[in-house]
Image 1 (cartoon, rainbow, N blue to C red):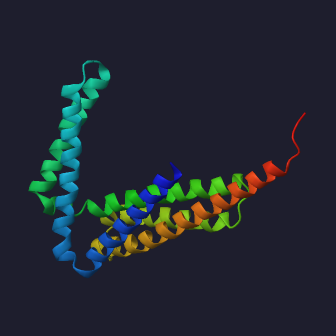
Image 2: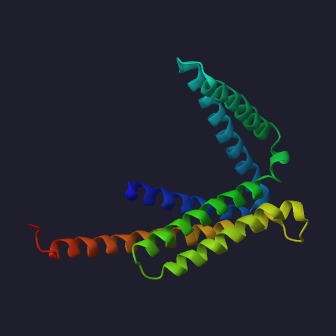
Length: 194
């Protein structure tokens, strides 16, 4: 499972990096495509919820939430596809939310290293805090009226986060693997119990 999670984080890192480069290199050309992909993903999520509702045999409170969530999500996705210019201002908020999640995951990884007596856990904790602050900055930016282009800021922070995410994922996996090897060696060195 850890291997699958690590591979997923690397793929996510590459996606962040590519999205960030696209927003930095050609914001006018890439933003409509990103909005369309975002809308399509949301619409597909809503359609999947509706399909799951039709396939589910039980009709309880959970089914009502599945139906309502599917309808709302499908409507939001279709709105994003039909009116991408209305969605452009939301993307920095969405990207900021991604950074908040990444910062939280990085903090959890740091605490995992602390509990297992790993070294340099404080680097992950510091990077998690910085990522969290960058996410808050992206989320507040459209509402605060700061004199920074939100698309440019999103691109820059996504490129940086892509590189950070990949590096932290590889470092955490290597550190945890080293700790597991040390724990296994210590267990094998213990004399057998009577």
